[in-house]
Image (cartoon, rainbow, N blue to C red; front, side):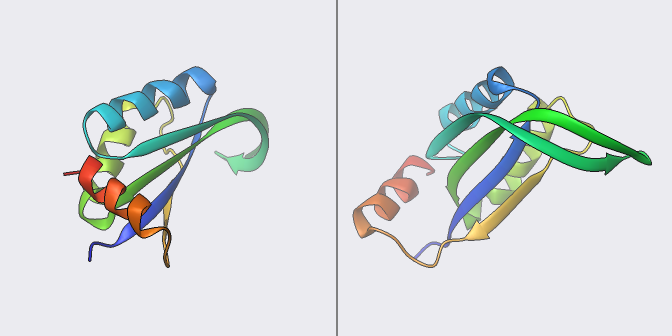
Length: 105
């Protein structure tokens, strides 16, 4: 069975999250995109403390598609170094996991 992943991405705003989500789903790099409109982020970038409002993009995909998905997100993203991290799914509904696999072929 294929390995399944949950991909966490921060975006500059909801519009960017939706645009990236739509692109990668249409290109079958991810089966589904969830966009969460607002969060507060605190981090250091180029030696300065930053506080920003960002959006969250969560994608469901397979381990087979993660390299291509990551490259595509970086191509579409406005950030110089976007947060693209992923987690292995330990399990889930067989029907849902089968759907993810089918949507990312």
